[in-house]
Length: 261
Image (cartoon, rainbow, N blue to C red; front, top):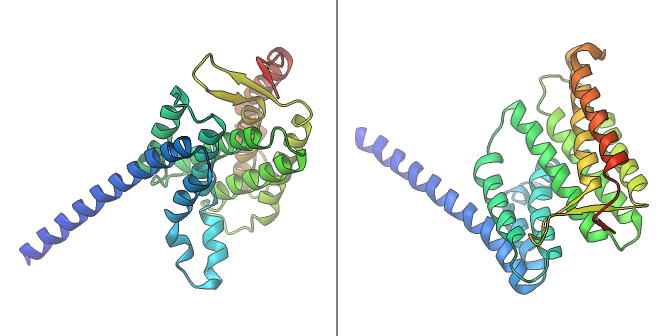
């Protein structure tokens, strides 16, 4: 019996080590192959293949599985798209993306606490809206609006489904998606992107505003759930006021872009 337990433990250790190694290979490989080939297709295929378990279920569970993994897919696809939009010459941004995706796969994604869910949600909003801005900057604004709606919907759902309440969050997450789409539509008239020297790092103003807005809306909805549909402003006043001030400062004083799309 003791030998059996030792064998089980050794197998678990080996399995965990292999899992980490494969995630590191995915994080680095998906970015590297995107830069080398100059195409986002192979990198995105690797991201989708890494989610094979999502599709390896009965058809009636497929839709639920896809919804539950949208945040992870958005993050993975965003890393690949940002790498693609950053060019085919290796820049510091590509090293940052490879390290960031690896950190997401190995450390952040497996976490399951309430705080982790909120962090995962905000990361998806920031990276997703950044990738969408870079990809659709020169296209019809409808593509950016649709992408931001999906991102806002997925990020909100990722947080709310983990609460202990039995309420149906369908209307709430759709509202969050529509709010993100509305902000994207307003910002699409003048997409501002901040650059950081020759690093290749680009940060869209839209991504910052959507991340802050998502943070506030999630706090408001969670407060409403905790108090049976009532919002206690005294408990959310600090993050709301702070976020409004940050957005106002960005819009008023930092709308003279280094790079205007």
